[in-house]
Length: 342
Image (cartoon, rainbow, N blue to C red; front, side):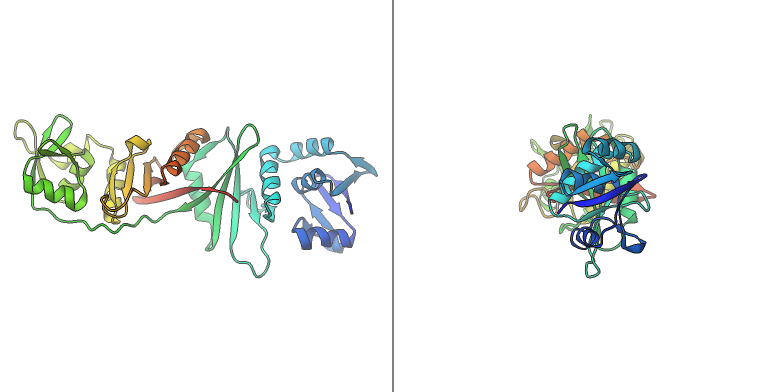
């Protein structure tokens, strides 16, 4: 049975009680009006027309699919990308509805009275930009048991979905206080020569990399140990290196996030070969591979979606989670993006 409806401005009205019940009660499509009528937005109307389930009239003249698409595209900003996602999720069995109230999210899951979990969907074209600040604002707007999905529509109409969430990174590694280990700054390397200290640093918390009979510390590792009064550093002229001198050689944000990862029981090492700042281990690297790739970004960071997609894809290909870390008001926030198959 094909439903009949009437186009009034930018809304489509269904009047017959049986058709209203069929759409709203069974398919969760439309918004109930007084007199028992049902209001469809243009995305819902196009979907039903595309599925050959509705005929829409205006002044008793039927509106074909082509004309309906043109009307919808004039009235709804970025109609094509939104419609691709709506159609795809509906066909996958997700009862989603257009979120018309606050405008922050494009769609949300239809909830029955007995349901508690809700997800919101934000739709982007691949030509749009990933914005870390806006992403954080979206996450901060969620209530308990609500989740956020990103749907990215490429130029061919294919869709990639991501589940977006804050991530609490926790590891099982305990930090240790070392007793003023003497180290030396040679060019861009901080070296440890004492055999006992090398064993202690490398085996306990996986600091550094073996460099012949010495241990080479990265600037970040050296800065962390210096800040925690576990090492002293001297240059070629035997002049003592201070924290402020070493900090000039590294990114302050990276240093803060490195320290935060250590505080939370993780072992951070360079993630350069994966195109990120850190790879992070929840247990000692002798026992497990790194579970996380942590990329440090500015609080106002923006990126084209192609670069973002490449980072997530690479992380998944090596069985790791990608986490974007930023510092806002002296607080470190980790945002995780997981590939999603709705």
